[in-house]
Image 1 (cartoon, rainbow, N blue to C red):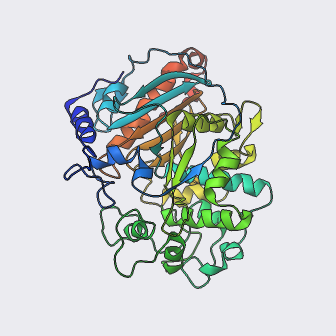
Image 2: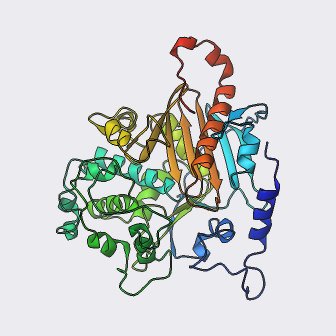
Length: 427
């Protein structure tokens, strides 16, 4: 299922040569300045607590939830890639710097693969998949009356008065429709996302940088009115996490532990990086083991339930799948529409139309993904170490590969579905 080409072999070799020796010496030294760059990222994404301070997300003392294994052969699937060529999922995964792939069908683990130098119990950085965890935490707090999505952000965090976030609502944070000036441009050194990385301790600080993520958020200015076009802004999630912490009186590491990780019956502790002042990095700082992230995806597949536990309110997820108002038109007018046509963004989840129904996606830069396909009963997890933060062909090809595998797994059931009811999206 995962033949290694020269590209993936050389990437693995480069990663295994890092941080060797007593002490390690350049050029194999992973530092705050290079850990997000290849080949250092392949080593760092699995060892974040050796690079940046982290807080523990405790799994608790409860029983581990079942994850029954039923291996299936899924090698004879074909995928039409973004460039028009026909390939197999194995080739797609081999060429997209994969660290781990897990696939479940109707609650059973049918495929599990790890790179030769990665262990199943190793936490891997989720990047912006972390946003979906924070979105679910918000959903639980909203259901309990702790957070009101319709309320003004300043009702919870008065410190943002006078900043670009003044006047924004919690709902606008959830759907990334604030009017704050924030460029998520990873190739521009002066973009706000790069300044934020220095403020949170993900890169070496420069003179004049705000210290800590919350001080950075208060420094942002307005670019336009709130409630307009969807624009992907990691800063919105960091402020959303601040709202959750302030409303609940609990830090994010413990909120994720108490509201998600323990009810999910996870197998391993997770972790979240924290800034120089001890604040969790809500937008992308969580690391977790692949099987535990698969449990999170299985919960989403079953409308917020895992086994006999309702972890996330079903209404929160149904609202995400079928949002009211102008959520879809706000996405259609965005720069993300050409890459995810027909999609939308709601409650810190991405959605795109699939052949057998809408696909829920949790996405992170450098190739992190959870894909939930209710139409085929499939959940897929992929950890990666892409050399670049964003790569449209890698993203599209991976979605198509998982979609093809899901269709094969659900084959007999799908034969009973009238062909006229099936969609023909680009996935």
